[in-house]
Amino acid sequence: MIWKRLGALLLFPVQMLYLMVKAAVCLVLPPRLRDLSRENVLVTGGGRGIGRHLAREFARRGARKIILWGRTEKCLKETTEEIRMMGTECHYFICDVGNREEVYRQAKAVREKVGDITILVNNAAVVHGKSLMDSDDDALLKSQHINTLGQFWTTKAFLPRMLELQNGHIVCLNSVLALSAIPGAIDYCTSKASSFAFMESLTLGLLDCPGVNATTVLPFHTSTEMFQGMRIRFPSLFPPLKPETVARRTVEAVQMNQAFLLLPWTMHVLVILKSILPQAALEEIHKFSGSYTCMNTFKGRT
Image (cartoon, rainbow, N blue to C red; front, top):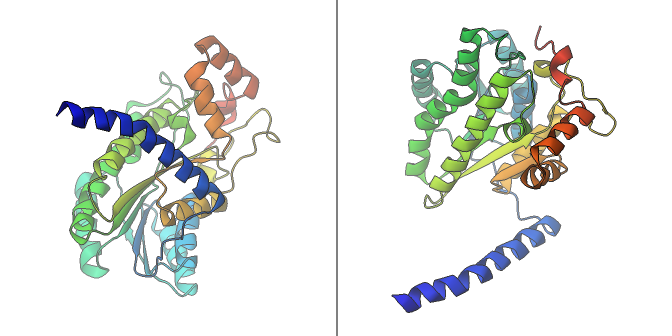
């Protein structure tokens, strides 16, 4: 037993070195992309914003069926028609992911009408853009129900069948604000941090589940109407991401079975700085970059 433990201890750094080299090689020579032609993809919040672009991108890359969930029928119908025009079968269901009973009911309807979901994209989110003291209690609860608890319900609804089929992928459209919060969006930052912890735990829990994987995407500020009015001090240095770019990189991450994706790559520097700099220095960075006051002009969806 002692020799076995000693051998494992000596082998561990070799394994770490191998995995680091393998990751470096994959950056230069990306792995073969997963074929999506047999996949049924469900996108929550799929009627507009990043969700709409995700639906387009999955369709463009050959997904078998696209299923859209959302709360606004007009947007869902428009996106569904657009995907069908691309030659991909598409269906929509009105569903508030913050409502547990509604999620389970609509998940059953999807299985009966469309079939098994093999790729679940948890994209639905809301932001109210206010400080804690200015926030309505119901609005705070709404953020947590949709942005965080909604992922519990959707994952519980579809993951069991993925495990049976040994084929599935859970995707979370998170935010870099899960790792570096800002004032004026306390509901959103809190919910995204919780969502990130959920996905970290889920990803590790799937290690012994063949054929089922997870991807968490953490993008910087993206130019959608959800964050309309948000202003960064140096937009030329920190330009907002385009939703189509986030969608393209997300689908690529799924096809490459990438567990975590930070967008853009410079966000890795932010993570490193948060690990080594004192709090006072981080506060100065927030003030200098304008993230400290970026929500002062926030308007959100109209």
